[in-house]
Length: 514
Image 1 (cartoon, rainbow, N blue to C red):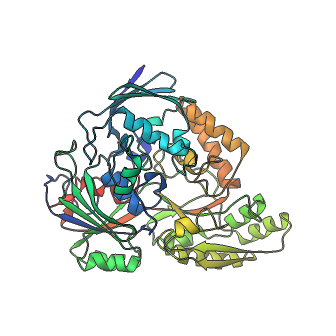
Image 2 (image 1 turned 90 degrees about the horizontal axis):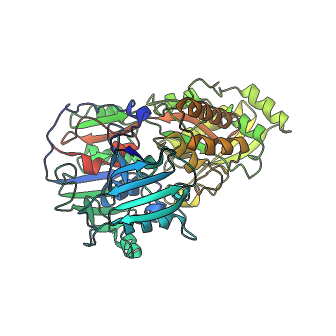
């Protein structure tokens, strides 16, 4: 077996995109104490501790960022490190992986952590009737063996050099074997913080676990109060008036006012987050590739970056692979705003014009409704009538996304190309929000995953991006930087993770009061 230490597998592309936060000291000594108050968007009344269902920032942060642990995690500098797995090794074909588990770890209810917990937690994602976004990851495992109380061996259908990265997925939290239902009901994990109270879509109160295996390395706050504030204006106001210590998803319209406040710091990192408009390609008229192409040429991408992101991002080309990914195809021809070309494509589809609904809510991403209205305006010149349907924020992810034929959405991106593609574009996976099925794309997805030659893999991912940009069912007009804000009372090491917002959703563990 090839030994791959927890520090031996690097996220090379994303690591290059990590930026230090404005106003942060280069080195700061952490100290314990205080109650952190977070005001977060992305909460829903249907939220639960079942990590298989987590889809937005509130529960992602409370889940794998505080209450639960995963097998691995991507550190702030982009390096893959162990969490519940201390180290791992693989066979030369990257098909069989052996994970050495951390000893001396206990769940919040006192149960000792071991191999059985890992096996049962992973099997949750492929159980009959389970609706898990991580099913594609776990279903690739053909066999899991308990090699000892603290060692698990996993055999894959095919080699996957990215496999340890995938086990950092925020859906794959580790639950106590034999007590999963209780753990989901009460929020029982091995994380740095335990649940004191939980009011879904309203408020969560957490307290630090004393004697935790991360003591002295992470987890500096005594308590954490997480308040659901989905309204962006109310969220920004809560920070400016001192009601909370940090907020996610800065409202770009109020950013100048916040920057003028000497008690507030804005922190911004460039990652792979992208704002999207997925259409169900098995529903007319989106089942016609010419219609999809017309809609791609009917959006003014630069206008969206300028007016929605206020410059905090870049134009995207209808692909979910971003500038922080290793195999990002930056040289593809851009699907430029071209109303005449859009008209021509509609005629090729046998249409003189087009009238469709576009569902949007600012729950999808900040400014999503405004973005949809900009799209509406730019599409008119192409003879396309977009009827913008403003949907309620609460329940958007359960009632609109994956259900309405065309809607607004956002993706944080993923650390590797295969992770992103297999989560949202592999045919049959739960989160394929366009239901797009292209035979060549699906073929390349499997071959690239097992390819160990870097240059061959680069070519395969380049072709996949080219196919998707031209024929895919998702309009992806812009990459958006992660822009969050905090009180100057808060500080950290000076490096901010860029896998997700709020220091890769790990702010609760990594930050402290200065």
